[in-house]
Image 1 (cartoon, helix red, strand yellow):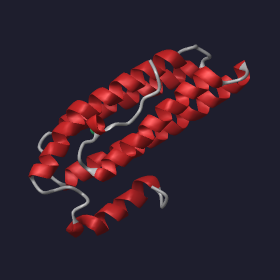
Image 2: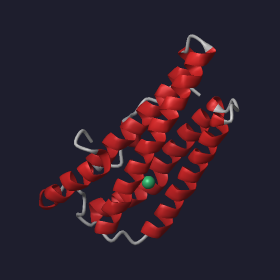
Image 3: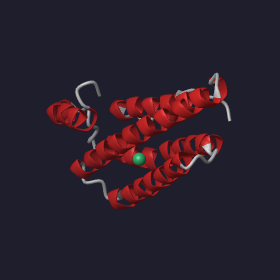
Image 4: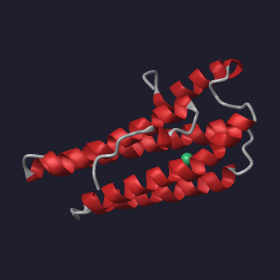
Length: 160
Ligand SMILES: [Fe+2]
């Protein structure tokens, strides 16, 4: 699997979510780089562990933000969407555990992450974003801007 380039086929048409997906893709590419361009075994292990930790943190913030946004909008399929997120986080934590035990699963993790994210964006995320757009409930709408910045700092801190 090569590095992932973000392109417009991955856009869900909701800018704030696209930005977060770009950041998730950056993490996947950082994992790719850690696997492919680390200089020593130790360096590789440290880089992989650190990017996996950061990626899990960011993913949880992203899911939290997304779920809060969909709750606020009364998205009818929110429960199913949350379920998909929960299963994915559980899988990531499982990989992390195996990594900490010293198992060499970085490549498998990279492929799983890449496949899962692209598939999730193109299917479940595009389903809700189309609904948000059709209902006029995009979080960027001017009347929501106070809500949006409050939630961004809640989940991502001031730097978002
Ligand atoms: Fe999602």
